[in-house]
Length: 342
Image (tube, rainbow, N blue to C red):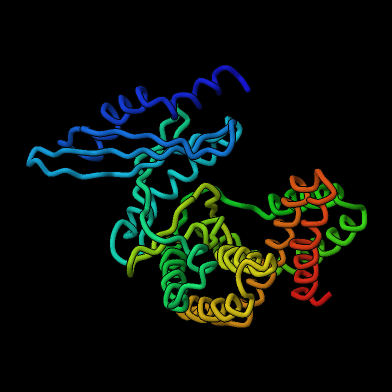
């Protein structure tokens, strides 16, 4: 790691530096008139090469009102600086289009600061959807409808902001996935190549870049948070201008993964998926056979991407290889072939 990168990462976890940063930069702009009277910092980073930090600010206003704000900052590794620029652009656009209040929200963006390589935003309070699902909480159907409504309302904005994801980029990623499969076995690589080539061939007829709009890019139950009767979505680092059905498919596959790993009942997950999809297609006026076919195609994409990711980082030991085979490959490849009718 370069000296400059180490210095930038240290800044985010320096209480002295960050307290000054909030006093001089964040508070005057976003919390006008407030005085910082309390400050706490907690480094929540599992990695050395990037930082995720949680700050608790105690603010006092001229009328003596005291308010506590929990703020987060992300500092990525140097080669992923684009992610926080992208996230900031997407969050600002969505926040300014009605997602700052009401039932459907996102966290409040507080800016991207290139000199710190830092994205700053308010924490969205509440219960994470994944936690509710794993705990077997009641009223999951109601929560699912809230999540579906959020996605439908977001997609109905049809925003033209953000980077465009092209078919060329998709083809490049297919090549990366196929190379990753080889790390597990030549047989997996050959099978994966056939599946992905079939996916590309079938998706071309649906590729309509003029109909692409801003999507979340990593929509899953870990990024959906319920606060009473409100719902918020976080983590827009992978937001693209692309096919909206890609978001829906990712949401489905990521939740099904919990079922394949026996962390949540698949029967419940499939029931919730039907509720989500029927509502989403109705709210977006897309309840057609073609829409459902596209979502199934994107499910193929996501199961193949998850497989590539897992075999590229989790096969360093025999036990890990066996776990990846049992909890990932034994489910993802058959699911892809089922969806493609191979």
